[in-house]
Length: 474
Image 1 (cartoon, rainbow, N blue to C red):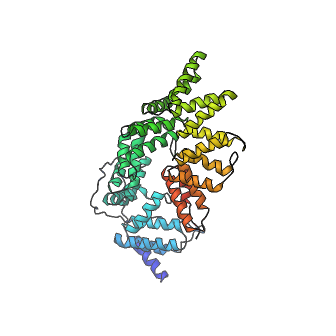
Image 2 (cartoon, rainbow, N blue to C red):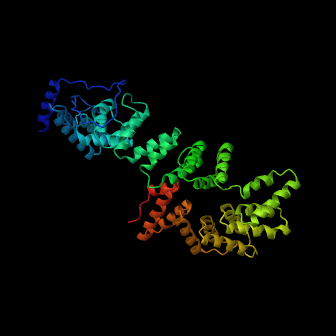
Image 3 (tube, rainbow, N blue to C red):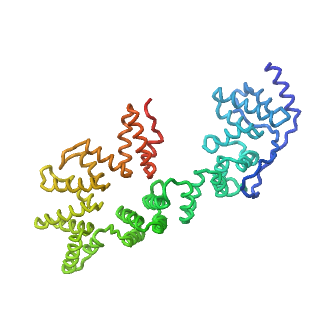
């Protein structure tokens, strides 16, 4: 049968008048809107499918290509090209199979068009006849429905290599209007890059499960710290300003926390400090006394500042207590040590994060028989049990590694879970990884995924990377 089909197909091929395919006009412009599918005439044209054989002989499936090129209607050609693609795929000739699918798509075959568009979007296939595909397949399908087509067109338009097909943002807006979260995020990121924070916030809000305030605070952190993006202090400040319009106190608290990260230019840090203090937060501690102490010109000036600090600390200002404690303990004067630790405990009990960090660091460096260890541990425990997440996080490592206090893995895990449940991203990551090591227990696997996803939602890159390859044991 094969010997009969080949000459017949060849004769039909030689009798055909091949019609050149229309080419995409590089200067063409049009509006990207939803439209009814237009009637498209698919030209008959020979397509390159097979790789040349090294021996110069005809490919064993050449007759199927002849049969695909021969029918008088596009519908029959499309079906034959797709059949050839399926045969090539079954014998492992994947790249040639994709070329056959491309030829089928250029004859109007819907399933083949889907295969090609998905492979092109994923970067696993580079079409041979891109110009024709865009005009005959991509644009009509993208304009008629769905989100995959507009997203692919947005990618092509944004590459700068394809002209006359509308702008990337036009296609993204079309995809977003059809419910694509991916397109909405891309539009929001583009608005953000252009400094249009309000527009970006509106776009994020249309798909977010979190509030506008939480999104603004998250974007401020992401942009300042460079979590998954290039650090941008000015953009971080713009998001904080937007957040302040919703909740000035929350924005000030975030500004205070970011200031303590000691990241960003001097100008950005000055703005963070200003925003924090305006909302009633003082990341320097003690009403800016730490800076005043460092820059005091005379002993008299210093004494005046110490007196003000003492009065403020005794009145319950945790920041002032911490600044006074750090100053006194830095003197290495036994006469000031008792007072210094007393003020440090006041600051810890007040829940001040820098105080908790300071106390934990001092406790970790003490000997087991140190008379200060018990009081510092008691203060940290009281703060943690009262809901201080920084204190919980500090106790995780103190109990994990031991030292001044006896190591207690169960206590460490208990505080780790408390911190994770309170929303601490690093605790969520560590707890998720802890449970992920217990894959024999289905419940532990569920907990691992739960905490890793929680950390990933807060922007944890390690959590996202682990989740991407997270395959629980069968």
